[in-house]
Amino acid sequence: MKTSSLVGLCFFVAMSGLFAGCEIITEEPPTPIYKPAKTVIINELFILAPPNQNPFRWIEFYNPTNRTINISKWTLGFKTKRTFIATDTLGQVKAFAQDLVPAYHDVPLRSFLNSPIQANRFLTLVSNRERMENYTASITLPDPINQGDAIFLPQDTVAVDSIVLQFFDFIFQESDQLVLKDTSGTVVDVFRYGNYVFAGPGADPYPNNRSLGAIIPYQSFARFAGAYTSGASGDAALGNSAEDFYVTGQAPRTDTRPIPQWLSQLFKE
Image (cartoon, rainbow, N blue to C red):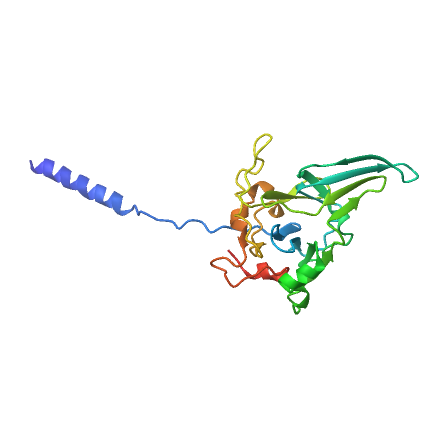
């Protein structure tokens, strides 16, 4: 009996020592790590669509790298209308075709610009200068806020090529995805907004990219500073628009408004 008790005591002491060496550790969830941007990104999007008074739109690109990047040979894919006009050597129209409804097109950015974006600077494409000044006061912003260039498009349609003219409407839909591609056709950034849902064909190439919510009139979709988890970090499949962007004027940033350039870069997630 004494021997049995001694064995039991030894077993208890041994097991107590074993469990004493084990600790239950509760780890905090990992903090998202934003990779350094490798290229130009889509930084902000403003859409004031009909039936709002004086509708207009603008899109902003940002170069967060330390080098100058020329995006004039890049494309921006979105749903818009396209018009074909084919002419002969005398300029006589030989063929004409037009989309009846908006369709997805990779619109060449050379239609809009011919200058590179310098390091840490912005480029904003605007459909109407007067409305831009009235709604955002972007022209009167003091430096260093206004660290970028704005290109005011003379019309809502911009011609591409010379013999067979292609006219793309500079109009963004209320729900869509914008796909930015470089000169090699590689997707470098994807932004989904307006509760966009991929409708095919085929499987969604960016299944983890959740769309940001609906458009709020007179507000913009702005990118958080450092939120370069999309193509700008080297893999467009990593992007998540719902996390990388926010809507200006909405909680918890009710004091923000759609001003191009540095505003979105003042706020982190």
